[in-house]
Image (cartoon, rainbow, N blue to C red; front, side, top):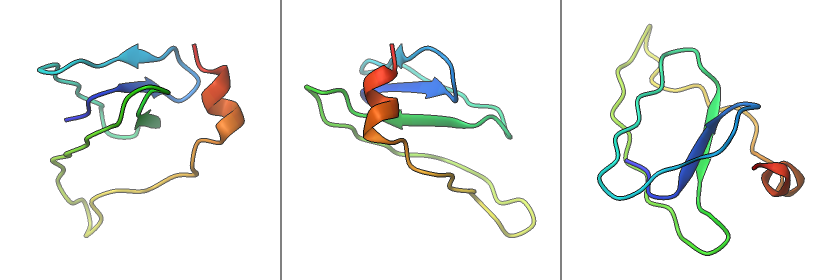
Length: 69
């Protein structure tokens, strides 16, 4: 669960509201975060593959965040 927004890497921001469900397929780079005026809550359910549950990528920079539309 995320309450704020997310985007596939390089894609348009999709606003997420209370009660929305988002499913990101395996291997799709994406980010999720708060908006300038809201906080974010994130609860993820994930399986392990070969002992790894998640592969964290680089953080979104402030400049990248500002450019998201």
